[in-house]
Amino acid sequence: MVRHASISRTTKETDIQLQFVIDGEGKAELDTGVPFLTHMLDLFTKHGQFNLTVTAKGDTEVDDHHTTEDIGICLGQALREALGDKKGIKRYGNAFVPMDEALAQVIVDLSNRPHFEFRGEFPSEKVGTFDVELVHEFLWKLALEARMNLHVIVHYGRNTHHMIEAVFKALGRALDEATMIDPRVKGVPSTKGML
Image (cartoon, rainbow, N blue to C red; front, side, top):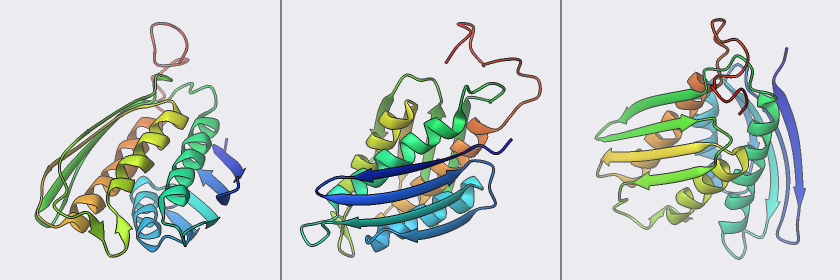
């Protein structure tokens, strides 16, 4: 069984085509129009062992907000769709990732109860031309559309690029763990009988 989904989203601000495979090989084909986001999604894909294809056109002449947000929406929708009924998944994932002086932790629960918590402070407002506040926007929309509980903690760091990189690598690794099929799990991993 291949767990995958394709999502299309077209608005007056963006036009996005996204394909996502949970049980992939860490392969990314990315044309987001937002270079720093492209770099982060490449890391996420590699460390999660997913396959991800994104083609996005957005109003980046205004700024990167709409494109970044809408890619988060599409990725969340794709993750939710690809998971299907969630039978047999581990459900929870937790990953610590260091990147030089920075340390980030990401914890996920594929609970169908969307929630997002972020702890940490980035020392810079921009990485290149990318507005750092968009990291929060992307992650919140991802959690909301995937209907997952997502906690992100940047424990420490001095370099904003390193700190964000650690977050995206940890996100990939935590989701890899949470989406894994555990042969011991019969049905969905919930005493309610559904997720």
